[in-house]
Length: 218
Picture 1 (cartoon, rainbow, N blue to C red):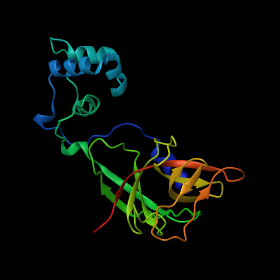
Picture 2 (picture 1 turned 90 degrees about the vertical axis):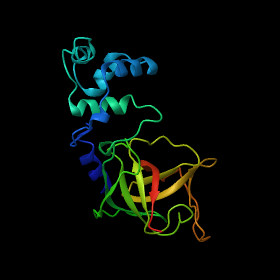
Picture 3 (picture 1 turned 120 degrees about the horizontal axis):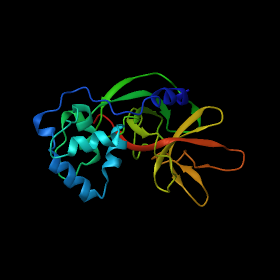
């Protein structure tokens, strides 16, 4: 099941950085402190993001330079304190796994067939995001059959007009747009044969995550 794959991916929430940072990626102490102030953040919040003791952050930011941030820590500092206009570094991108397929149609048994990887289309995308290949034409106004959609499993709050992958009690999944009054999963298709899936009553479902991106070969 897709759920078991998600559990495996949730075991390590840490940001992994394997590239050595370039000189341009570094921030000096004054810039870090200025960005903390601009964001209204305390040093303890930065320490929590880094997963280190606040005392280590204090030593890294003191005027004596008692301690240096490691390259891995600096990558996270840059992510936490990034501002509009910052130029992304290659290390800000990472591979996204395409873990299987999702039906753009009626409820269909989830397929687990790892397909490959794709580069993240934007920097600092969550490392929990994964890709699914679309099967069917019920969402072809936005993602035609064969397209890849990226799903954020940490974004599950339902809002009308947004797109989600959901799974029912039988382990069947579908990809649709959520609408309300009544609560339903709405197809977005040029094919009029596809109908809304009305939610409620005996139909229980779980949000796998929100679809945040789509990609397809032209």
